[in-house]
Length: 406
Ligand code: AMP
Ligand code: MG
Image (cartoon, rainbow, N blue to C red):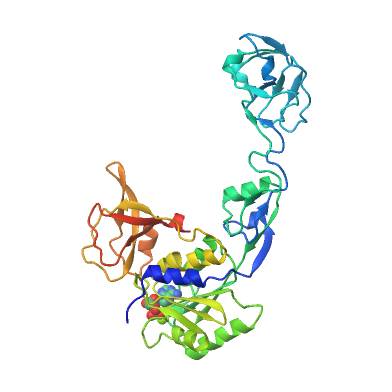
């Protein structure tokens, strides 16, 4: 059976993406990293009034003349004060952020003037530009402008901009994501180690990946390697309206072993769309739907979970939020290692970006086993080796820092 290329799988996933229906209105401070389900429209002009960009004096440009001209300064306007009015032939002491008084059209830096009590010695007109050091009303946002669109992510800068336009609450996509870990070998972290058992690492890893990429509404459940129990658990999750997820992500049980039951249950209870990709790690990746809910069947190996989530699941979740840029463009960096044997699958290597001879190069972790997570913790990102290609020192590879992907 041939393996589906990664690009084709991603294209199919993105085509199948339907907008999430679960939307929450929350306080801006709680919406960190989430995706906006509704554009944010400014309630005010920002800035609300023309204001000084520096500490100095405000005046009429036309009042300037030869260097050394001295004018009276009867007004003092600090940030938060009302603007006041400037008469011809006068200047006003003004501070950063303070409203420019009516009549003034220019602000000089205090370093360019000599302030002595209520009088100021001014520089010559030819050293000054009319309108300088004034931040005009509405330059950041005008009232009724859309400042952040639907499907945009709430970065810290976006949160600041939204707050600045007087909007305290936002509507965000809040899909309920059911994470199903599977395997009779798994035990919970608070149990003492039992023979033949391992601690579940996929559950905590996936939960953190989801939270960090803007999807905090995560429920976790464990499944044994028992088709009847898997079937019943899924049925319960789908029929209870309180529990019904928007997305299901499972780990393990989708490979070709006799104890891999998840794919069979998916086929029986829903539809399998595709299975087995030309991706390394992550070949058993499975995608389908149960009762119209997208179902991502990730492999069991923890580094395969990481790669499949970042390269396939997360772009799809982003598309369901209406985002355009679902997979960031990679950086192109030279490898400082070799891969001698051309592969049959597109490989994502755990690498680090390090300085060497004044430039950046990629260093590969010596152990790329899909069952290992320590190499994924050592790494700061993933480098991609296309199908059929080899790598020698200096070969340029696509590289995504984890921080950029998340
Ligand atoms: P499977 O695809 O179910 O055959 O699992 C492949 C490998 O991943 C096996 O070595 C499993 O023990 C391991 N594995 C499966 N699920 C987890 C998990 N939640 N945490 C850590 N390892 C897992
Ligand atoms: Mg298993």
